Length: 72
Image (cartoon, rainbow, N blue to C red):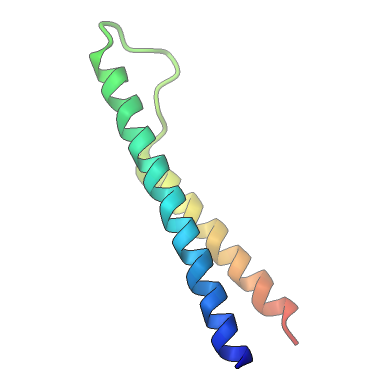
């Protein structure tokens, strides 16, 4: 029973993360469209999406390592 609840909790967390990712992706696409519609390029250009993806993956992996180290 405990394992089933743990899996259910992980699924709920995954769903929350996916919803947040969807919102961020939509916002990024909107800001990109606004930036391309501007007549002059702005000095604060958006960072490379692939670099952001790598940073997110590294952060997730670090969190997973810390979580596995914390478990007995």
